[in-house]
Amino acid sequence: MSVKSSIMITGSRDIEREVGRTLFEQHLTPFLSQGRTWLLSTSRGIDQWAMEWLLENSESCWAVLPYTHVKQPQWVQPWLEQMDRIVELRLPKRKTAGMIRNRHMVDLAGIVFGFWSGKGGTAVKTLKYALRQRREVHAIPVVVLDERHSGDG
Image (tube, rainbow, N blue to C red; front, top):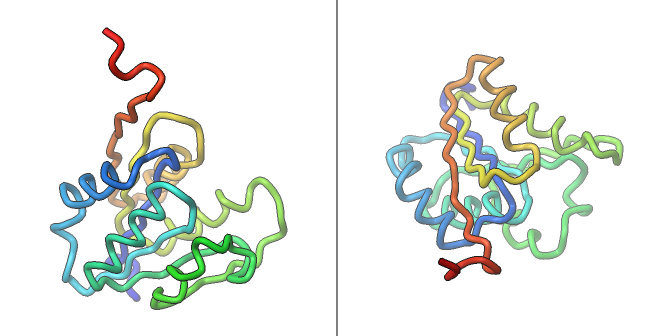
């Protein structure tokens, strides 16, 4: 895998499936069928929907894990079985493991896509790191409707 030909996806966990899939159709479709490797983590939200969408499009996907395959949640195990490669970083269990994993993914990527809803997480830190590493960065803001307030005028 060449660094320039790989694409990393990062993003928020609170993005619904249909929103994610629509964003991928709009922003990622031009990058399909080019023999690229897609680098993904295995969190809920954007990562989960990216795994699903890219595998449906027969793309080459690597899952980059901070720990090991067996320490991943049960819901992600069927997706991992479909990955072309699983990279286990085997980091010590600590709060910074996710960010260390994301930096590793940026270091492997030529392009970084971030789909961020504006709520916490490591997506913005990852995008800033990617810019410092002089990667091509696509930061896509995502509007997530708060169900408690939708419909209020």
